[in-house]
Amino acid sequence: MDIGGFVMTDSHPQPNTQQQADFIKQLKTTFEKMPHDIELLLFTQKGREDAFAEGARQIVRAFRELTPRIRLREYGLDHEMAAQYQIEHSPTLLIAPDRFGIRWLGAPLGEEARTFLETILMVGSGMSGLSEQSKKVIANIDSTRQIKVFVSPSCPYCPQQAVNAVKAVIEKPDLVSLEIIDIQSQPEIAHQYSAHSVPQAFANDVLIGMGAQSEEVFALSLSRLDPQTIFIPDSDAELVETDLLIVGGGPAGLTAGIYAVRSGLKTAIVERNVLGGQVATTPVVENYPGFTQVGGKTLVDILVTHALQYVQIYPGEDVIDVVPGKPPGKPFEVTTGRRRFLAKTILLATGANHKHLNVPGESRLSGRGVSYCSTCDGPLFKGRKVVIVGGGNSAVTEALYLHHMGVGVTLIHRKDSLRAQEFLVRQLTLSEIPILWNTEITEITGKERVESIALKNTLSGESTSLAVDGVFLSIGYEPAVELARKTGVALTPEGYIQKDAKHRTSVAGIYSAGDVEGGYKQIVTAAGQGAEAAMAIFEDVINPYWQKS
Ligand SMILES: Cc1cc2nc3c(=O)[nH]c(=O)nc-3n(C[C@H](O)[C@H](O)[C@H](O)COP(=O)(O)OP(=O)(O)OC[C@H]3O[C@@H](n4cnc5c(N)ncnc54)[C@H](O)[C@@H]3O)c2cc1C
Image (tube, rainbow, N blue to C red; front, side, top):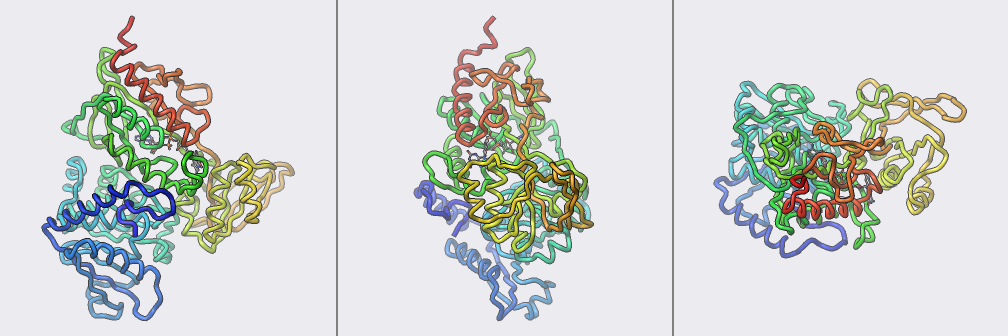
């Protein structure tokens, strides 16, 4: 059983088992000291085989083995308690219903075990752990908010958003309530809200967030009942001084963090989203030395566990501004949604963002059948018909992943041959996944959700249409250079960060590493560049080249 991601599920090297034992011990002590016992009520449809109900029982059982402070009572949907709590769906888990309005529709499995663990700890302690900035925003809410967060067990982005919502309930239990809805267990509710990607958050039936938001942005969206994209902290926000601030917790940033701290630099990593960057959503990695085959998520767990032994990581914070110190050579002032940093040097390891097709219907139906993450959203399309667009390694990997999970997938490629590695192409052929060659999507259509796509043959110009339930886009990535641009860092004609052999950019004291620099864009190269950059930064901090005339 995976509790908090510390127990690995596949047959690859386990992260340090001593760490697991220490974690379990620490967890038991934390449970013992909790001021509140936690009562869980599980409602299920009696007499029906239900894998989700069994999953919910198993995860609760696993937690109860750690502490007697958690109590579970189970009722059928026809029991008077179900009527009292207005329970309609099986399974529904109520968490401390005497104190909070938190209900879980489905089972907290996979990635969601993390959310469940954090929820139990917050409910048991009675503390939300919200930042001071978020607390101020939540304090201003003066009418009820009924939140729904749609999640799935395979979505690495979901725990961040679900935990944001739990924190809001713990902070304001009189006005805020929450349903965490597993879309695999409750597809009809997802359908009703046209939620075909995860995570998606609604409050009072208004969409307030698609994808994971930082805690502060979520709080603001909840308060305003309108999706927000940025949060500027108040001037009294915490100030952290550091030698090196790394923007991005992908392979480049995490590796740089390990090297920098081992060199003796005071270092912080800020990551706005899920740690591990693109690897967190990669189904399988087969070319990282030391592992013949490893799940992207497993590799991230190993990387993050290693990095955390050295470096302070600030997850769920978006770096929104970097202001060079004045005069040059003075520390940079870096602003996130939660605090400010004074940093002698900055490493931009911001990686890459997925590209858009830019065809009519794409943005309107994003999250309504248009998806950029097969790992997150693939399970929603089991037994249904989708297309995946692209011709490179990622597109082929994702097509195979969807096919093996039982999704009816067709690959669409605008050329007549794939750019993917031969090994992957062979697997694609063996899996008999249909391919539409020389074909482009010109429009994605559907009222509430994707219903069909318009296609054009690039050779003959012939137009056709195809009825589909989903469109997965894997047409490449573009460097995430918004912050570099804002800071005046020079870019190459191709749009990557321009740097020298020591990863120094055009702005003294700012460095780069990983996919944002272009090149081969692999995990191993990103990690290598992160290591190189950290060592160069160490040399420059003790002997600043920008102070030499
Ligand atoms: C589907 C898929 C399959 C792949 N398969 C393989 C494979 O099998 N083998 C292989 O070697 N490579 C593979 N890759 C490529 C590999 O994942 C990338 O090369 C690698 O992740 C790049 O690492 P990075 O640290 O440079 O960037 P990223 O992994 O992109 O990480 C950058 C991080 O920076 C964060 N960030 C950006 N801006 C900000 C900001 N303003 N504030 C805070 N944080 C910010 C992002 O949220 C992100 O987490 C695959 C990629 C994809 C998408």
